[in-house]
Image (cartoon, rainbow, N blue to C red):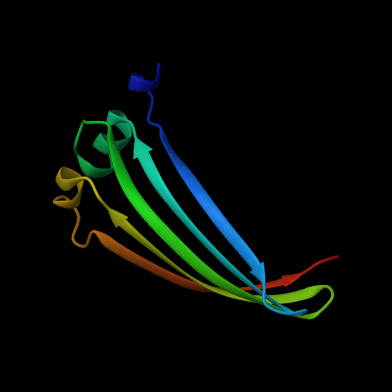
Length: 103
């Protein structure tokens, strides 16, 4: 059934370390696979492949017990050669800022 599905999956590993009472550093890395139908829909290539690798780093600051600020940056790269030829840039960067209030 997987060959007929538009499916993708990823395997990831993550790391988190307290740098002090209010600071936490987090990092993760992953690799992803997609079915031929998924790749055909998004890239025009009907082959299943190990598609992408990615990494993310974040630093969380918790100045109050229920409030935190978490800037993060994520990099991903299309690693399959045929898929990479179908996109303008095989490297993608995303940065963001998460404000969180626990209640």
